Image (cartoon, rainbow, N blue to C red; front, top):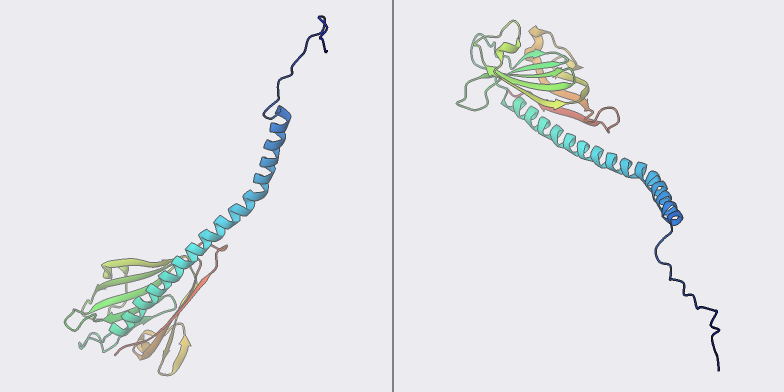
Length: 206
């Protein structure tokens, strides 16, 4: 028979649950280290995704520009007036192309200007003044649109009777231009982004 001595007491220890402070601190430190290691990877993935989006938008924009440029060239038309001298191309410079255009059979003739202005590609439209002006100031045009931004290394090139691939045609020979090439490189997100090349060829309508 077992007996308990009156001078001895049974002591019960409570069951320990949860984490100690040291364990919590160690876990927090490990989580912080993992976050510090993964953050650059996550940031890089976000940058790649953003660059891909910018590149896709830039590609779409260049396709729109090519379609618009080719349409303008198809609509180029010499107006049967003494002032127009039956010239379709009125100015053929490295950074500017001015056309005489008739967008529809019954439409009034108009001036179309494509210009590389700094890092932008501009398209301007205005009414035909009735004769070839000596210059083409901006107040000749009533509609001004920025077609592309972030343009680099851009130029127009011209092919025609007696010349090929030139970037400038004298005013007296602008009427001889038969084909125009717009060549440029688009940097949608600055130097870090993938460039988008654009090279549009279009024959001059007559």
